[in-house]
Length: 325
Ligand code: NAD
Ligand code: LMR
Image (cartoon, rainbow, N blue to C red; front, side):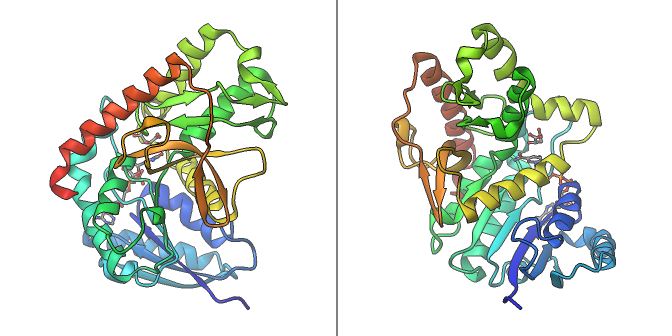
């Protein structure tokens, strides 16, 4: 029997976690022979609901789930964890932008960054989903000076998956037929879903598409997909977010396919001229435990303008939370 891996999930009684936890206990992150211990963090008033979720987890009789720790204390939740899914944060409702959540959610990531810094495994992988995810990640990084920025990423994978799915539908193919999709910038309405490098069954995606469709349909569709889901469901995306969180952690752990890449929000080191000290989504390739921004991509004037626009929004978000950095 392998040694159990410890996984923390915050906001464990919320709707994303309600999809995520059962996938984790079914082995969808680490495989069917890897036992896990779940560390579930909630705020005190939600502990009763969390107990109900844990009853259901237990009732799955998962052979992989060795133990569940329930707590409202981040230092217990993050003690020696190998993975941390930071999901707990308020979601937006109809008519809001994700950055409207900054003031209510930012403090959570300062507190949790400090707790991770104190007690998590030094090789912990921390994936921030709670919105606005990029800037919350920056806050966590700045509050965890004894961990490396490489321990943290923000979730771009939902946008990446949305872009794959929408392009596949347009081209009448399946998502595995598409490689080299890129999401640049913020997980927000300014993000830049970029088809310039994407290939569909080995052919340049742009050679198969009208430029008007790309500019007037594809880009705004992906930028606004979160709002579209909220308007239809009355609540923000949950199952697709949990799925994306597992996808991103899996790519981060197992690496990307040769010739392909994924999108991840990481602390900018200045690649493509993006300001350092922003958590910005880049196309990245991952080899065991190393995340590298894909180098040498040709960037058109149009792309550069979009990349700068989303960078500017991230700078404004950073300015709004200076006191926590
Ligand atoms: P939810 O309201 O259903 O659940 C959030 C949970 O977090 C609640 O149970 C709440 O009690 C808990 N919580 C609040 N503060 C906490 C704290 N300090 N510590 C621990 N738990 C805390 O919301 P949800 O639908 O699960 O969404 C969670 C977050 O994820 C939201 O901010 C949402 O906007 C975001 N989100 C991001 C993406 C993405 O792609 N990055 C996708 C979907 C949702
Ligand atoms: C999403 O993209 O679905 C999430 O960020 C939730 C939201 O507020 O749109």
